[in-house]
Length: 131
Image (cartoon, rainbow, N blue to C red; front, side):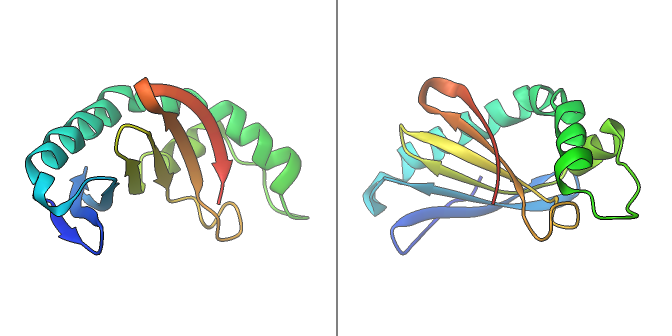
């Protein structure tokens, strides 16, 4: 990671597979770049190691989409199709020693909203939301 300090946050564009991901870390000063890089690497490594946990929720998300968000005449979506969307991370927003949000590119599924996975401090999974 090659973080840059921009207006109160550290930011970088990192690759996840073949797609760029905006990574933002808030809560450290400009003089704390070494700690920002260490902490960001810890978060990014955790995301890579635990991505399978997010993919495991694909059947639940597909069920939600089919029952609550499907338009008239729109075909049902499968869990496998949802897994395809959950492989594309748009951005990660981290609060130092707080928690972080992982945004997935599902805009076309949920009317321009993204699925967001919330992970609390100490890496506790807090749930999904649409934003």
